Image (cartoon, rainbow, N blue to C red; front, side, top):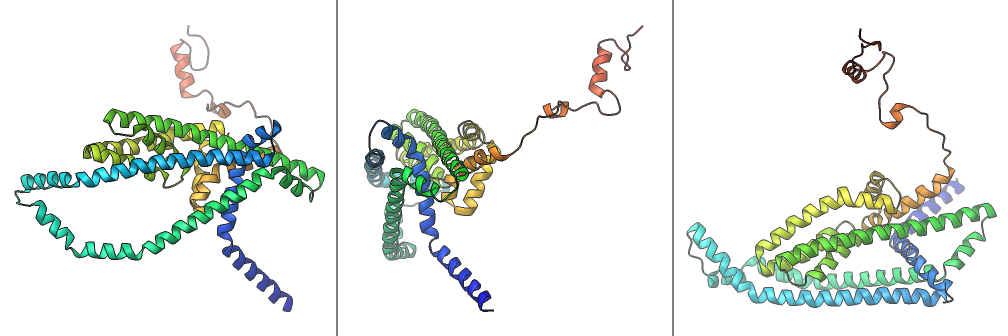
Length: 371
């Protein structure tokens, strides 16, 4: 009884610790796949005589500079467009009031609408809730920065000390298991690189397509918006598509409200094209898994780990499939028409199509020549 109680207590303690450390474990998992993604670049630089720590630092520095420059450019563009929208809001309101007066035979004035908005209860409640939620937003921002720092720190150590980590892992395994672990590690690096390559290709195609649309509509900052749509829609799972499409719609609205509608329609149509035609084919070629498996792995990853699971599901499944494929015994496939997608004649003799062909060729159904 004492042993049973001790086992139950140990299980409860382990379950409690696991739930408390779930966030940290997810961050470590993200850091591990990020280290796998930059492993080819770090290894290539280390092969030329550079220390792995310095090579990893240079790779991270390049990524940080690119991200900071892109965010700075995007922030300045967004701030300018928001100021433009605020300055043009009276004109938009006048146009809306004029349309309402002509359509519904009313006599609205902008002054009355503004007074009603300023003295409305919902605006007062919204301001109070916004003021109360400033601390919550600040806490979420600080928590996000801490998680980002944690992921960056772990991924740096995973990439810089990759050989040492592999040696430490292999030192507790027999030689046969060591070869399997090293092979699985190499497969994970290849599949993660292929996944990022496919995502980069889809980001390029998406950016070019949206750039052409925005340039044709005359929307300002079309190149930056194209890059924004390509990167955000591909590298932020689940909600990336909506975040990517919201900003071009906002900028297009400042030019012409109808342009925002056209951008929305194009985003929806392109998303369907990407989900059902472009993404399955690129993923199948670069990661070497079936499109249905790729789609199912994303759904399963989202159900298990949310956005993180959707991001790492495809390389994880591709790695597992390639690793386990070496242990699956395969046999030669029999030469049967059904294997090639054609149905046989069956025990009842030739099928209907075969009989029709023979009749068309001037033969009787039994195969003999016509007299």
